[in-house]
Image (cartoon, rainbow, N blue to C red; front, top):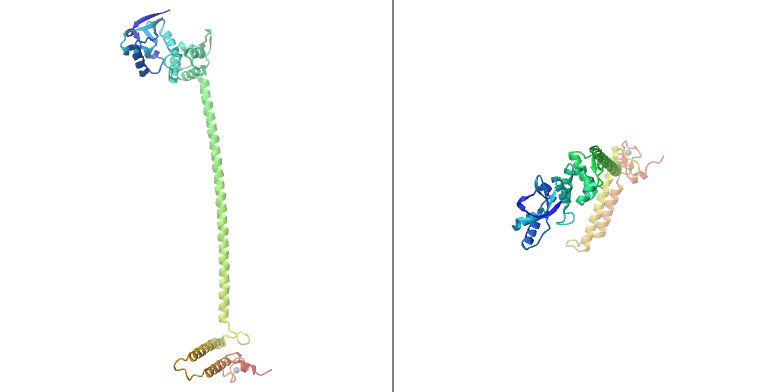
Length: 352
Ligand SMILES: [Zn+2]
């Protein structure tokens, strides 16, 4: 039974647990209040006459707007019933009129219905159709709700028949959670394994590179050392050869000279040096004469040339040529007790 009346706002019980919207919008209230003051008429609000008083189940914005506009009595439809009837009505309100509901509003409506011991026994489909949401939304809420406060085992459908609640049992939810956790653990393990494999591969690659680099360096180092060793050997051989050449003294016949006469034969080096210097002196004198250097008028270059040539010939002819063939180096009067003879003397040696 219901009838349209005018009711005093002061009589209305505004129980926020029957308010389907999560929050009242102050902008909407002001907008409605302005319209009311301008003479606009709004549809009647819904009031439930219950043992708990005149419960408002729809029109929370409108009541607040009338109040704001300073109006004391407002139009209302009065229903007879219980607080639960008011709640059921409240959660089904605003699905097609009034301010568009936000997701938190429909979520609140579903929660309010499921929180009621009796309303929660209604099937997901019945609740969903009444509130104006999808059946899965109700089922999802019921799953969450059951986790928190225990499952409703049977629900009542539109036809009034009780059927097992279309929801998951706490065990099923726990099993699903467990399965999810296990699958995540497996995925994590697989990822960890992949990561470990990748790292191992990187490590192998890095070591291989290092070894390759080390081998290359070692090879280069070995090549360098070998080159240096060969270079040292060549230097050493050259030095030895030079030393040998310095130490060994040969006579005019190409024979090795014994240590006893080595200095005497080396003397020929000094003689050759003197001969070079005599040539240089002759050139100096010739140049001076040619340029008529003062005081050179009476120098006769051909005479100088002849005399220097004689000096050179004498020195050259006096060089040790071979070990004395007469005494074989044991000293004799022929070699003037020197142990060696000149080339000219050698050529006159006694023939055997
Ligand atoms: Zn002799």
